[in-house]
Length: 182
Image: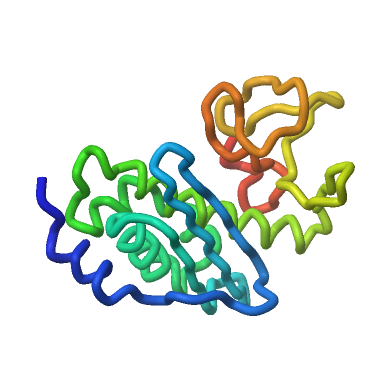
């Protein structure tokens, strides 16, 4: 499959490239298999994404996905932006070759991580490792860590679930998402 005209347009003329200084939320994701790395930063005003930027190191599809995700999220409420999925990103781009679908996963994941980072900062939930490095908040139930996506128990805090491979962000702690899992 060839890239669509929409993919080529977002690759050749990417929108929202850059980094927001002192952002309200940051989402960083990467795929060690293909080497793509994405960072999305956002500014929130009145529960809406007022500004959003991305920096991506990767293939044309990864750049196009980053550009499209930021366009799709800009001006949306946080709840609306959280509803952006890998499927909706790929569809908005007019499809992606099968071997590039993982790029749409990265874009949606980076956006969701940036929003979760915003909520964590807003609620003061930032963990630090023994080395002082900040990491994502991982869900805890009865003193044990778990993945909010597949609900698997995790032996130790980890940024990626060892069962499903998704980022281990604690969704149920955020008021906007409390009803999503129930």
